[in-house]
Image 1 (cartoon, rainbow, N blue to C red):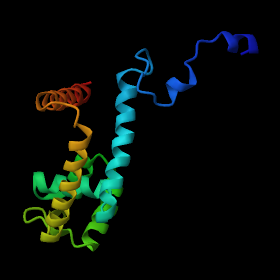
Image 2 (cartoon, one colour; image 1 turned 180 degrees about the vertical axis):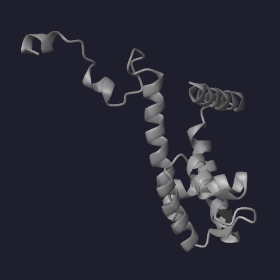
Image 3 (cartoon, helix red, strand yellow; image 1 turned 120 degrees about the horizontal axis):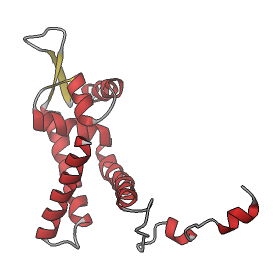
Length: 165
């Protein structure tokens, strides 16, 4: 591409790309871009909030999944925490070392190992839940209860719709 073509190419002002609140709505900086920015920012805040507890985002997610769904195999945990089986195995090793989980053979399939929370795991998860609830409270502070509920429902709908694509 020649210099003259570059100068006539349509570009966004630099301040629009740096994160001003007045984001452009045209492609590619539409809903997907805003959700991506939200994801990165929220992930950073969650890491910061969980760090004093000695928890990573992955560990918190894995503990939450086991708490909600009950005993899980390594494969189930990997799928439900959206990581590879190898990454789930690394998470499991650290959580077992910290005595947050225990692994036991499945009574019906001896080759499958089931993961469950220990009392220490339940305690650290409860602490994590508190800091995440506070983070969510601060993040949603400008929304009414109804708006907050509507947002959660809309986000769930987006997740469901994308899963069906």
